[in-house]
Length: 210
Picture (cartoon, rainbow, N blue to C red):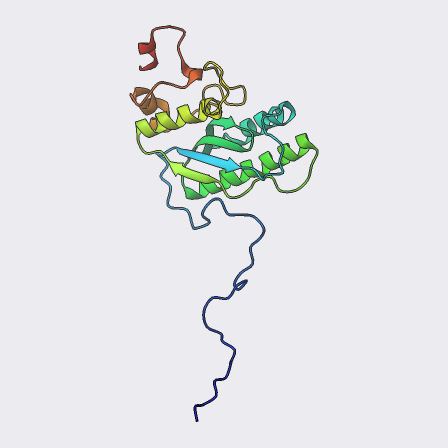
């Protein structure tokens, strides 16, 4: 006689629904500890807003954002040099003395931005979708491409208009940069033209490559 097989409960393997429950928000950026940051390297930072947040480019919202970005972006150890505000995300070019200065500077800006958006839109609740994304810019070419991408970002969203300055972006430097890469290096680079805000009055296209 063959032994009878018993259906015993099993605790092995992955079960559906097991593990930590999600918080309801899709993580867009890795939450791992950020790497060591070197003061000589500027950073390109991106913030994304939650889907229910109204467009940031509305006049009432943008008027307040200009004020808080200017007020919160100039510190001894943290500087917001360039920004571009799009409908559901914000691009920044910043300088920070170290990893801690970057973290504290971005936290301060996050509070200011969230309060400004909620006040302008007459709403309450969370504004930012997730942590910010940050990439170090280590060469003059990287900085030049990043600054052009940030300041001319509206041209990548299918406006169909002739190149012009974006009214929702900083015209030139917001806080005075201190790194060599953001003061001298990026202007010496030949990695593409300057942002529209930096175009000279001369019609000679060679003037775009100093």
